[in-house]
Image 1: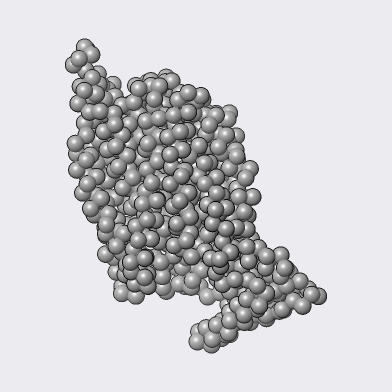
Image 2: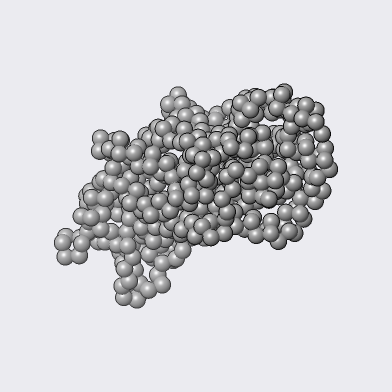
Length: 560
């Protein structure tokens, strides 16, 4: 086959590398924008679609609905990965963007719980699952498409543009939400939240038009011309033990930790600021957005650096630093964003005094269970107030008590009540009275109802968020090139998409729900970080021993 007439040569003549990167990145960024709108609006969506649940269960259920989109991502990776290896990269990620855009637009017109009852959250979850299936096929296709156009020595630099898309999309979603909030005021929470979803219709049209102009990946064209493409990608990817071992190594030694760090450094940081520290949402979004603006170019820096010194050492070093410093960074965020919580917790620690076995796991996603034990009532009130607390066992048969302050130093005790024998109306009345008493005592002890804007140290909160972004970019910037180079071209779409989306969908996607539940159970506002630290530490060890360095491999036979 002559160079002048080869598919690779023809593709490179007809399309510049810059256009390839732009087209692939724009479409991927649009899909991530769609996906992150839900995460950024989880609290509002909880009120619109889960009004039949109590507030704590409603928010957890909203987070789980967010995670439902992640849960199906590995299945999307299988479906679209197979198609990408069979019919080509371009056709596959064109299909994924249409599915994603349609599902997002429909979220913007869904009726709420108050209109159609339980059908509303069911429809919402169904659309989230469609989005998850689509994004499961998108990332691998875009990363492979760019990598298979890139010169071997620039693959990290080229694919790092794809890595920026998720963060830029998160930033775009925050900016759109902030603009809508500012323009609509209180109306945003009643109907204005739909506007960011409906805007995606315009973005969908632009993205589809641009992708229609693309040619197929040159490596895929060459495989078709030579007859070397796979006819059964799933069998070839998972039936070959050596390839399967590499898929497992990529999951546990790279993508699990990478995705936990991505969500821990961005979306979980936003949850922590707004839900735990009670920072006003506009302020929290502005701080995170400013950190994203500064941090996003670092994807390109670390991607380029990985071409020179290797992918593995940069990714694993970033993970190790994150695991070692997450706790002090988040404690610093508390100190600088809402010091009144920190001061009050030191001056007047809160305890729930309860009999052995008197507390339940307060997690009821379908909203059918009533938590009527005195301990459950006490913890629900404290969780709603966003106050850290400890649990102390007292004598059997006693009613739970919320103690605010140190024993013997003027502590205030607020007795809870047993609700098992009360009517629903009487239970609500007693709950309101008890919550009012607890909140009054908390305010008297110095616990804030929300973060005081005058006391927020904005530069230092921003700096902590930037440090989290450095970890995100160091770990994520070289990742696409590393994954592409780990697998042979004929089964690459399937092989890299599955571990990436298990890491993103199951390890990263469930982070908010797991972390929030851990905080609610323990009363420790930092306990959710243990999930991040443990997953990342395991990934560092697995990556160190089971994954090779790949920089310098060719796109056609990277795994060889």
